[in-house]
Length: 135
Image (cartoon, rainbow, N blue to C red):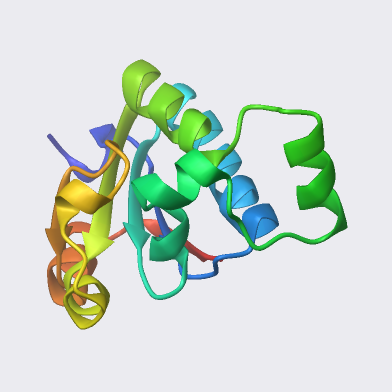
């Protein structure tokens, strides 16, 4: 496949545990994925806490004003957006190996959207020529 034939790709690095940032990044990623782009998420630092099964089950998210409304109105959250993007498009989700090791968390502790747990170097290699967004 030549450069011109490759589909556009987007790499989204989620590092904040703020529900609004997680949701915005996931919305952009899922829409991009469903629109024909190749999307790769790298979940690192404090964002990882929001992807723990326990956090999602308890809806124990760090929120601002908009996040509180999202929770009270029970709209589909970032985890649902990512699941939809994976089902309906070309999307991969990776946890940060260094941050997960630091916290003692395993892939099994996280919601079932992670394709793998990898290092930054591997993610950067996979994301060459992609547009990068960090939240």
